[in-house]
Image 1 (cartoon, rainbow, N blue to C red):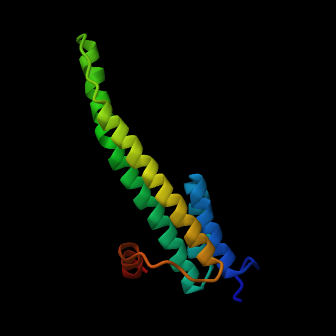
Image 2 (image 1 turned 30 degrees about the horizontal axis):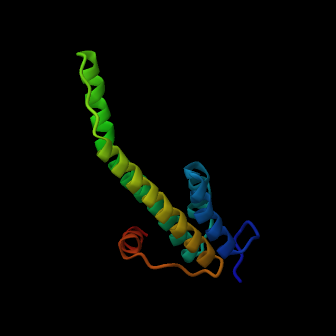
Length: 137
């Protein structure tokens, strides 16, 4: 079992990166991944850090895109309120909430699986993300 320069196993440090993403911990994840990229030399660990941050950012972007339509409708409704009108499309808000909750569930399950797999220094292949990481590392 390889050890990191911190003295803990490389797999445990990789799992810590993924598990920090479960708690909306972008700051914690960025600090751990930043440490890994600056200090550690293990290539698997470096790829794991970049993959975790990339996945977190992808989930955040998709979440923002899902919320864009209901936010736009709310903006238009606020504008119409100035003139005594209103706009409400409950279906869009309900669909957005459903998609957002589904995305959160997928993110949680994926980060748990990746964190557990990291303990053995393995991973789950996600072609789009892995290709992105391989291209830039």
